[in-house]
Image 1 (tube, rainbow over the protein chains, first blue to last red):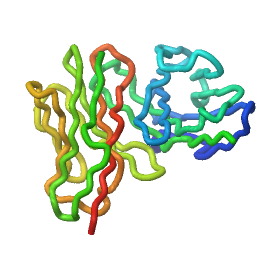
Image 2: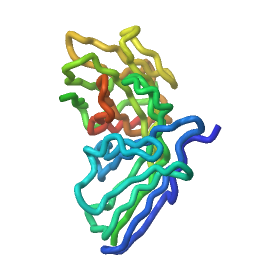
Image 3: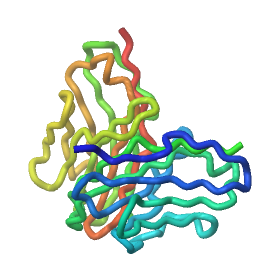
Length: 116
Length: 113
């Protein structure tokens, strides 16, 4: 049973380009979460999605960032017109979606974005 | 609002000695608490979680944590450190009906030979 998959593992972009980060949840999981980890900091929640729905995007920056989780295929975190401050590790997690606060989230290996 | 504070940004121990990583939480409701470990350039792995059952929770790799409501603490311990325990450890809180998990800033554990 494969875990949460993220690709690419490393992504280099120049300022102004777009970054697309992909996340495939664990088999049987229908809920996806995105987190950002800035250097020397803990993870910060960005967005929570179910298939075709954004449930909570309270942690997403207001501009340039968007996320989707289509009916088919992986979840995508999209960053338009990247700036140097977007350089970070972006982690995806998935859960079964039972809606319980005790539910475990399983994390992927992360995508490390570097903006030059 | 819920939050966690990890009291030490860096802990250094000798191999074979006990490990104590401290975490205090703040929550208006009964929280669920988690400890995750992150090895360099790797994803996060769940060590253990507290879900209002037993207050002493045993996790993987010999780690355990005790939930103390009176002290609002959830400290992580291990009787004897191993070199492979060197990593970043995150204490996490999630409350009922909340979609996000609040991470502490992390504690970097160094294990000396």
